[in-house]
Image (cartoon, rainbow, N blue to C red; front, side, top):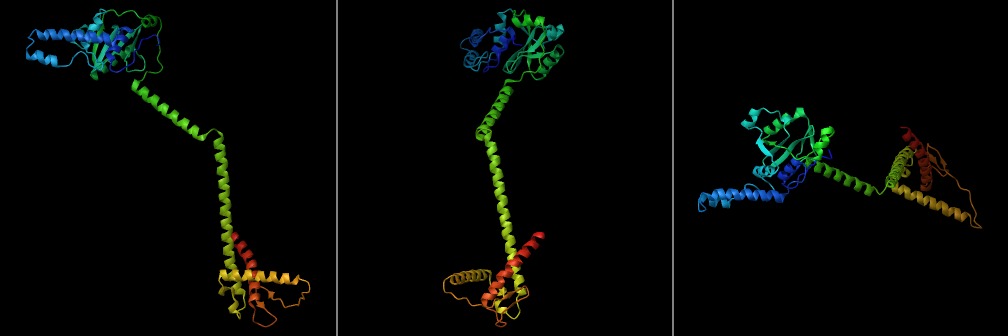
Length: 354
């Protein structure tokens, strides 16, 4: 369809586009159509002046704007009709009684001009095929012979005025070419507004994609993010494991303290671990280890004499000293540390099995 001349809409110059698409070339410009409109305005003024230049009708006519054109580029049917007379063409109203009495099949005509409100467009036969040359479309629209009558009837229902173009149209390249071949249209053209909206949407999607790619800063960025995520998950799992181990250890120590209190002799309640808080027990353990270290350092000095002393026996059943039933605080602390460590191990294993 590249050989078909098709002017697209610019402003409100649909009358110009309609004429040029009908004649298949740049035959009319806004200046030429404006000249025709001014000529029509002058003819109308002269007719009104015949009734007297001082009449109320004449003064009212002069104050009114032109009915043949306006500043937006609109031109009246009178302008279009006068422009076509230059080429020996005439417009006849399609649904007029005079034309309807002729009973002419629309496919036997050569072209139509359609108007609704202030919009004009051409439907023309090129070669052996019909085309909708509406300037609001992105390109010519192929119309089959069987659909032409239905298409015109639909326009009439929508309020369009349809004019049949009578006379011989000027020769054009598209008409000569399409006399020899037929065209097929795979995709119908869209309205210019729809096409612009589609292009804007595609442009917006492309801009969003470019921003995403720029933010990604190349394909390596995704690999780095994946590595960082894996490291973060590993560290999180380690922290959770450490917290679980600390919680298990605290529970085991608490159980061991309860177990050691039950295992202590009932005749030494003043030394039971249940009478000591965890903070006091920690302090006494530290003091015990410091004393042990001090005694070891004294034993390593030259001239130091070591005397044997009775060591307590430790068991889960109780604590005893060779000096009697009374137990020193140091003996109790030693036993508590030993029992706590053993019980902690057993309790931790039992907890984990559960």
